[in-house]
Length: 319
Image 1 (tube, one colour):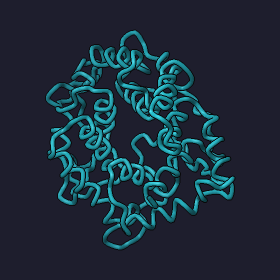
Image 2 (cartoon, helix red, strand yellow; image 1 turned 135 degrees about the horizontal axis):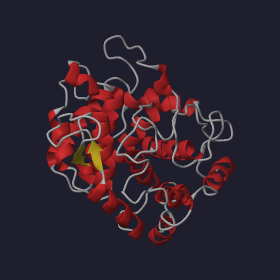
Image 3 (tube, one colour; image 1 turned 135 degrees about the vertical axis):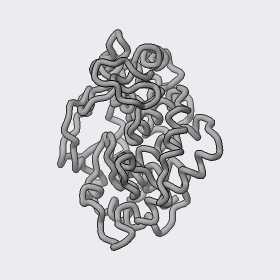
Image 4 (cartoon, one colour; image 1 turned 60 degrees about the vertical axis):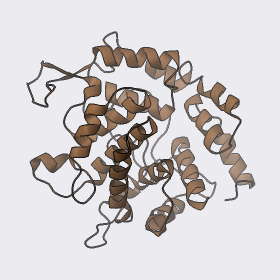
């Protein structure tokens, strides 16, 4: 689909009918709009639409959902992840107020500073100090670095936890020596966010090893047998939370500036195969749980978020 074709223009117009959280990124990544136009649209994220609605749900104690993390999708960790995905400007007054409340008041229930479990009700480590599971710590560090917070304690732990095959796995503490696609992508996003925030060179070396772990497996196959690891990796979702899929992996490689090569070709072909004749991608999977804000998207229906992400991945791959 040519960027100048009528169908491409129609898709872009449809994307620009979305929330400011999406509009500013479309202007930046797909239209290469002037910086002042992008900045003006981005400034709306904290004051209107999804971003403002999510910010309004923060409690006086600094949390969303009353906790640092939960098994649903409405905790502090999940809210900060969404605000990062929405592109809330870290320098905005709205972001500074919200993140300061988290930094100063939110703690991990049960987890002591040394990683010891003290039990329910124990007021443990500060939020940006992290807890013990690399998939959770990766998500905390990604949004923490994005919002300019000190997440070095988490990063140091993640670097120590990298496995011999290049990836990470939350089951490593229980003896696993093989990495997990899910955990690995969460950590890779964290390392990249810390690099972009000015992190040390050792982060890049660790990140590249993790990216090679995924690429050596063509982003979805077992290295030993060549079989697909999990059909779920091919079903596109947004937000992903801790779960992996090929679009999430490709979008990370794009942001990391990885030079496309044949190891990503199958995943890109799979992504292209999912494009509808009208040039849009549909939501294929919704992770059950309580969303703090309604993105207005349903499984089986065209998704603005997935269409936008797919288009910028294709621009990267073919660019």
